[in-house]
Length: 200
Image (cartoon, rainbow, N blue to C red; front, top):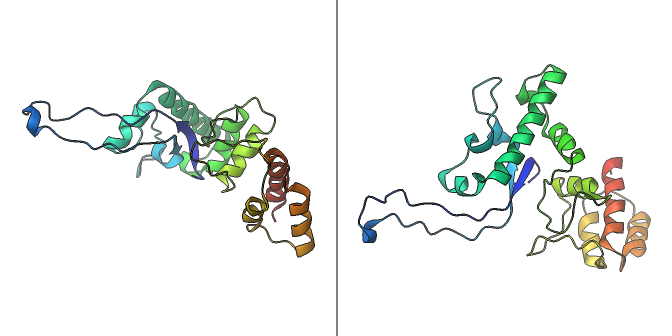
């Protein structure tokens, strides 16, 4: 999700809202399995109200989503994002709706906040912010366990899939593939970041 301002990982649990009924008549909620999830910036800004920001458990979510976002780790991260958004709006003398999500994400990433749910990429790693920024731009590793596995050797197919987003001549394309095939993913993502920032 490109507009993420926080990541939560609490499993989806909710309480029946019809406890006054007999057990066989109570509300049945078939709750799906849920993986780590991202919180979008839009849920912090209520529609049609200028200057008001929502935080913690007050964000705009459905009844079901509230079952995941209501826990303390998640609400604290949301609060940090709201604080960053408010501070930027005041500093730039603009309404919160006029602050680009990338500006808020930049503040949060520089503070070490996770915005994409890689389970094995810590904010102490020197490439943390770059890899997180790339994920928000659509360059991320797809694994069932949400791992990045930076030391894993990359295959040609993975490199080609990322390079599809860039316009470059065939010589440069092949050079990047030859340089990175079989090398650690960290090295490839360093090159992808440079290409991305160069506006290819």
